[in-house]
Length: 340
Image 1 (tube, rainbow, N blue to C red):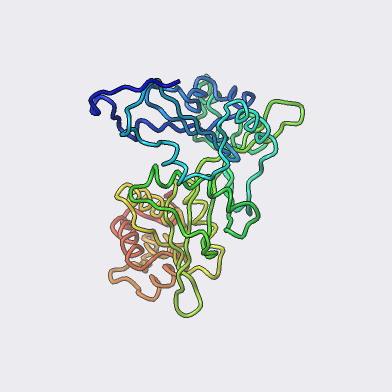
Image 2 (spheres, rainbow, N blue to C red):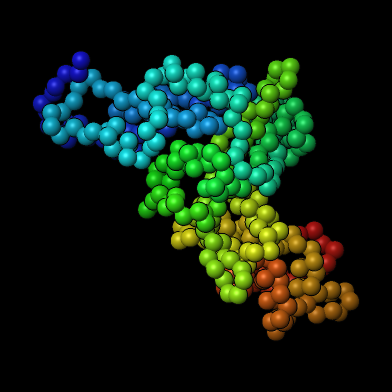
């Protein structure tokens, strides 16, 4: 039984960001490939910590709160507060949660439609004596490969509404002034990033782990298109999403909802890299210096050509004008045959 302690309240306060501890928990078989980094996925149970754990794929939740002493009357109702923001089916039993983690590890599969994937070497491989880096790509069937898969989904996707209710707590914890969306609005779209690893068993069982997600909302754009607004992103997830949207005829532009400075910087770098990597755009923009052919970026810039490419790249006007400054300022060093 807890002891009632009457003491100065200042001695019993703590930073809520430090008090709440999160963990994406993997089954035992799936922790081994992580090596020493496996600790990053476990809860250390420090003093004043209230652990909220998630099964790493299905995001099934476990919440446990305990204390050896508490203040009378003024003590916050921790569970009552969290209860307002997480689904009511969370587990309070660690043994039941651990059992759920092991069961979900082999049966959980991503919801929605797969739209992209990319590969990276595993942690243990990158720490070996080889010259490969963790960011190097390789074939998905390679035994050292970690595959990252991107799925597109909506609230109408079977099972996703409940899944999103478990995932959305991250919005409040990691996005300043973030809030839950109105889930009854079926116009919301989502892209979810998963890590897929294969176990070393006889059947090479695939296991999926949640990495992150982005939400998109469509706004009507005259006359018959939509402008998608992106709320959050990770670098590789953004690139995969952007390539996917280039294939959709109904999307006119991809815009960002109230981006933070770091968010804006990351988007600028990714957009610029994609623009500079487009050989056709660069060749037309900068011209052929050896042949004396003038580039479309001028000066003066060919406005019709700029607008044609802006629409093709699905970038808003102001942003595209800024992105065009880099190849324009550096065109004197560019040739159509150079490696950009």
